[in-house]
Length: 347
Image (cartoon, rainbow, N blue to C red; front, side, top):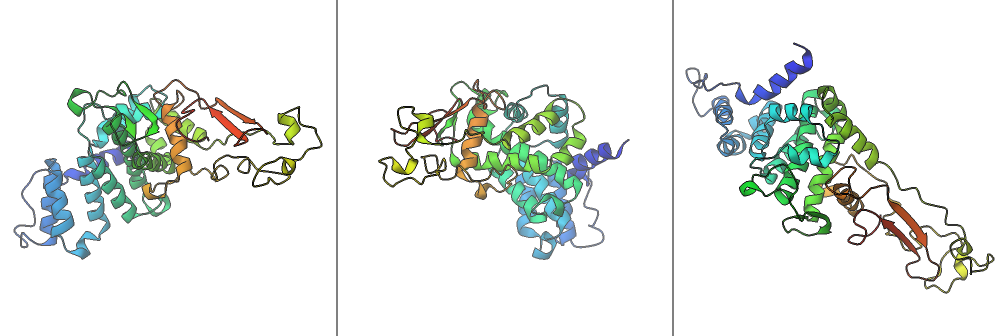
């Protein structure tokens, strides 16, 4: 058995170390000691009694005992189970998938599953309390961090886009889904939903090395690699030049500052000066793992990714981008995008 398979078995059995046996500390200590309560919590996790286990781990153990890394890790597993994660099944399904679209892969992993998005949030909060970034965590935890990222993305999409079979879902986006419209309604995604999805993707991308070591078959590994590269691709914009370049009717001696525009433009304007969103030049950060730190620019980018044929459920192409300047309009600059062309600002 190779080391990586051994790690998978350990992660899969981490919740079942007590194997349903009586509390082994009973004859050595009181049953309300931290050690005894901790084993009780593990027994409850063995039985998929997530809430009861979580109650012990968060309210009945002493603060000092709760602060131990192994106890936090067990709590993370309990929240993950409540979220809808079956670690071994999820890994095996990732290894067998043949899809190349990242968001389709994530949604399909949670078909016929009861999901609890809030529990996924708490699992990730617990992970961050163990180690805020990948270098602060073990390789095993980083593998689980990637799985939590997939789960955050997949369960969020499941909760809004896949309500067939009495809410259990069938792994496909329901008719009428729309990632471009900002809404908390079913079949749409709110900004909070997008914060979860974007930070979930960040967890995957942050921990691709650990995940890639495991995904030696199927298309998921290469799909995640391609998605990261696509996410980090910036829009190639043409040179702005002078007004004459965009309207031959304007003499080539006229500068941007000569146009009757208020406020006046500089002689060498940027695309933001010409009317694109103020965050147009902000850097793209596809590695953010914090839901409360997702900027609007990244929400717009991920909405288009979900709508695309490249990574999501739609038919538009992320490469379909056209930039134009009309010196006689307001705003002067317009970018037309194939994905979400009218619903949200470009880019």
